[in-house]
Amino acid sequence: MQFEVDRAGGVPVYAQLARQVREALRLGWLKPGDRLPTVREVVASSRVNPNTVLKAYRLLESEGLVEGRTGAGTFVKASLGSAAPEAMARLLVQCTRWVAEARQAGMEDDDIYALVGAVLSEKETEQDT
Image (tube, rainbow, N blue to C red; front, side, top):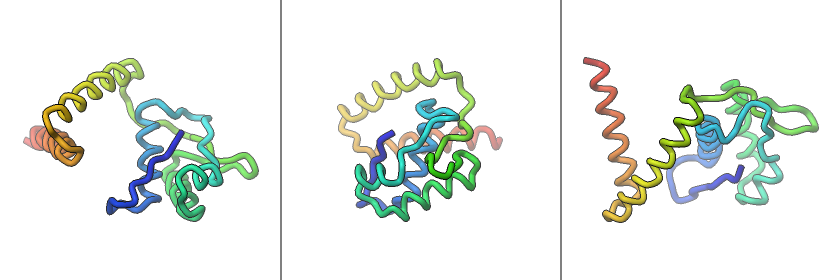
């Protein structure tokens, strides 16, 4: 797993790292038993403070998603998501195409997030009625 850090955004780096692990769990890219990159590996590849990585890993541990094993590293303990892996893979392909189409139409990432957020909000509103 390779972490990407957005230093310009308003989201703390530890929260970005934790979110990326959660997303990888939901997408099936990480499974129980998989080892996360060591703190040293994350520091080398992402140039973040070791304490930041530890904070992210501790947060995930408090959520019951990972566990630290002394001398061995941090390992995935639980998975997230309920969709079948085949469905997730198919939808990921469709979503990738849709995002490419949105970008060709001139949409920026924030526009795409807003549009998806509006769709998700609409679904929540429908469920409330």
